[in-house]
Length: 181
Image 1: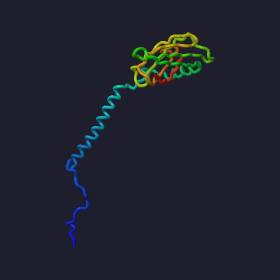
Image 2: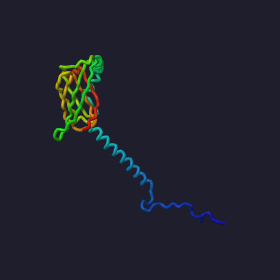
Image 3: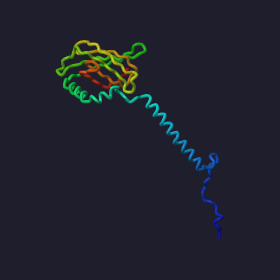
């Protein structure tokens, strides 16, 4: 008969010698370090997200929210005008800097050219305000207006053509464009 106290274990388990025996306090320290690293990385990312972009694209957002009905009426009045805008863009290299030339054609609802307008062009980058630029457009006649703008870089841009002054925009046309050489 065999004695059960004298049998050998059937497993092949041997604890690692380079770690030693892992006890409860070792596991706790590892767990605290793991989650501490996650909180640290999240904190750093949140800090940079909050300090590099204030979240306000329009500095007059509060006023625009209060004047929503007026803005909506202006938009409906602009649609009722039926004006149409077409434009051509050309990227030029002047020395070491890039420049964008825009020629816009504005027509009324009967396809007659709109001359004598005070027009402005605004070009802004979707991700940073540092490269945004606004310039008046020069009338060329026959409903055409021209402007040259300094360009920070190629890629996606938002273009807005405004007829009237910046505060009382009678008409505005906005389009996202992709600029390439």
